[in-house]
Length: 146
Image 1 (tube, rainbow, N blue to C red):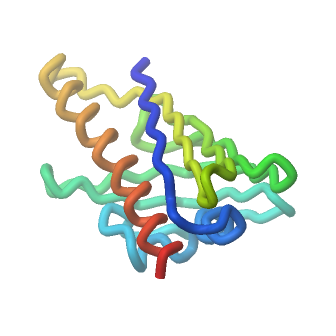
Image 2 (cartoon, rainbow, N blue to C red; image 1 turned 180 degrees about the vertical axis):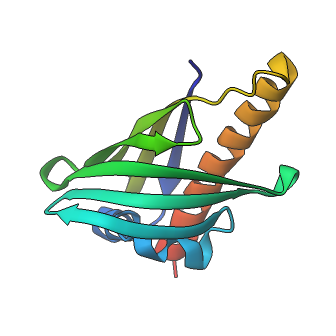
């Protein structure tokens, strides 16, 4: 299963970046690939949300239900798809104070199969996942540096 990892440094205090990341309800306002996020269940630092993402290259919507758990004391989160269009989707976000700003690390392990389209489509999907994670990096940085 493909694993994608990204790291970015954001010129903003870790508390601000972490708060922006935890506010998933606001993502559709500033992330063009996120059409909507609806909270289904909230229990302390555990959220279950329905996501609708947009894949503009294919004019396609991708839907999934995701469980996210935030570990405030460790400044990290884990997430996994409970059901949806991916065959598998899970990962983690980690935030660390670094050089007066915040290092934001993402790890995503996913599987998205389109049986009739094969290996070429898997490469395209992989590049879309990478671009989406890079887009999250940029979006969080822009929000934190305002």
